[in-house]
Length: 133
Image (cartoon, rainbow, N blue to C red; front, side, top):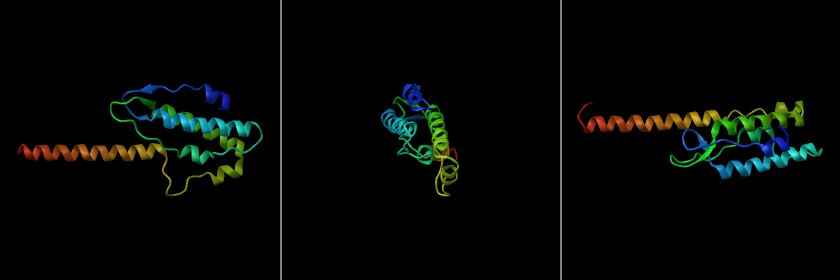
């Protein structure tokens, strides 16, 4: 993935499922393009592979339109791979996530579990109110 390829990339928009805020993603992708362009010109870029992998975006509300989260994550993984290649083997070792860092897919999974817990609790309360516990 080079800067031209990233600039030309078009992400799918969705109204259902996991979605990221369009403006936030677009702003971050602009930073990624600038970083890749810097490396292509022989200068280190502003972003590291680690910062790209750990980037987080606001989830879109239930009725809103956003970029498909999986498509964004795949694109950012390709950007991170290119940044690792530019930075070389010493940066690959230093870009390993720290123990407290969580990848995007894990954060989304934790949020999903939280939503399920709220739904299950609401169902239990409703059943008790109806006398069916």
